[in-house]
Length: 300
Length: 44
Image 1: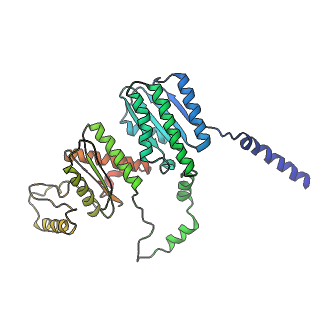
Image 2 (image 1 turned 135 degrees about the vertical axis):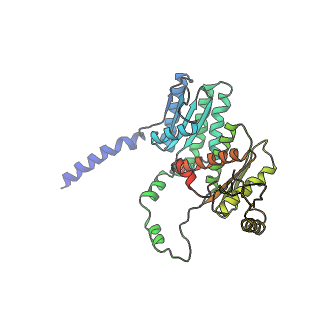
Image 3 (image 1 turned 120 degrees about the vertical axis):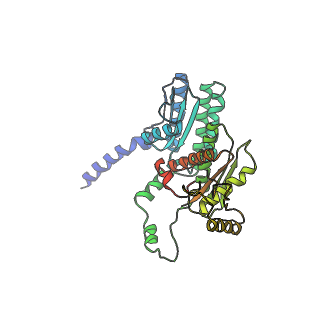
């Protein structure tokens, strides 16, 4: 028996020893420079840096360049590629011909690399790219990723495991809580967070940039209370109130905003009265329509 | 229903377009298909 134990122990030791002693884990970070915008030596240096980060912070990164994104917007293509990639971390797509850049942070790292840090990473790449210094942009971008990865270490292990655990095997406490729910209160509600609101604003801002227009963007919670607001440089200040009102109206009416239903040829007095009362009661944060303005709220 | 998004500054269609893009980015982060956007009351 003792001999058997020694054999088993030896086998386990051999299996664990290399990983513990050398501290090496296979890395998956890579740079696919299909559009050949970087020097190979710079790519090697950047990959080494990314893989070092991956070992320390478990942040996997894929940077991909293409000549041109032909089948859809870069946002859609990057999202699709990130899903195909199937790893947790950062996915960056660079479109050489159209000079576009998209950064995707997968779910497991979204709490560690929030919107502000994503902007820092993006700017690190783009500031140099705009000067046609692609190699410099790559190295600065990787350095910005490294700085962001420090945050993932500070916050402990990224949320991948926690997210998977919540999805696949809820804790016993959560299970009990669900079973204890009664009709008297609503439990376990999903709430929009500031990070979520910022994500919405980031997406809207990118679209606004593509349209080359300036907008005010407001995000409210389910009670219509302002969570995040952004007035882009050059946007009309007065439209800020419009944006907030629209968001509040959509949230508190529990319906998307838009034109009156098709077939409405005359103003409905009861609808108008109810909407005006709602506006008064909400301190004008809700927006009624008038017959001259055929939108009962101004989502579009 | 978890909130609302409002956009102002462009034409109605442009505002809606920008709001949809914001929600699309958010939904992607939640790994929800973009097709769900128009099915969600109050999402824009």
